[in-house]
Picture 1 (cartoon, rainbow, N blue to C red):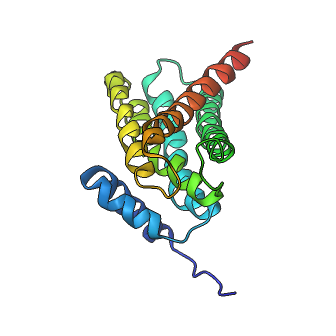
Picture 2 (cartoon, rainbow, N blue to C red; picture 1 turned 90 degrees about the vertical axis):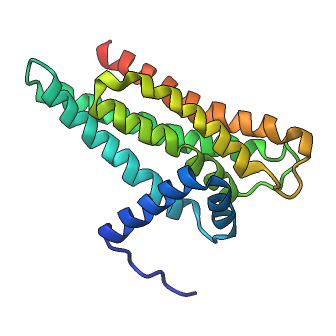
Picture 3 (cartoon, rainbow, N blue to C red; picture 1 turned 180 degrees about the vertical axis):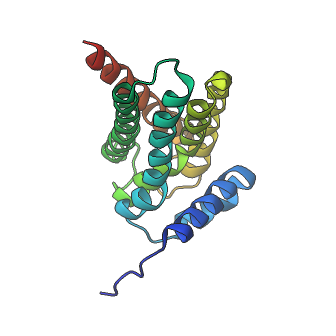
Length: 195
């Protein structure tokens, strides 16, 4: 077994930027590259989702400290932890649900494929979350999360074993999971925080 070469933080963020750019500029071509790659769930999570979620958590912390009238370090830290936990838990739970539902859609269950579909399709959610926590006045950018549905559809299009008439339904299921679960977790965690 060949050991993986370590990647520097600068290179990781450069690769992350290239992947985000590809998903925005030419998503169909980027999905072809993604489906050809041999990656694991941990690789996708560690090189794509966690850096973005970490940026969102740090942005939430800084934004709360800067934009609030009272300088409450504890509440800013709690808010950042809630956002990080909701996004990370949402990524993991949506991956798990998609993995378990693959058999229902007549696909061979694959951890790697479900990770690719859920994590890469959630890129707009992460970017929108980062923009909205850094600039709270831009709350309207949340409408761009709908681009995730298009990415889901491009990701499932042409998968072996998936009937053509179920492609959009599967894409809609993935979209519902990757967008709905983080919002639900965030609401529950904020409720428990104020309880």
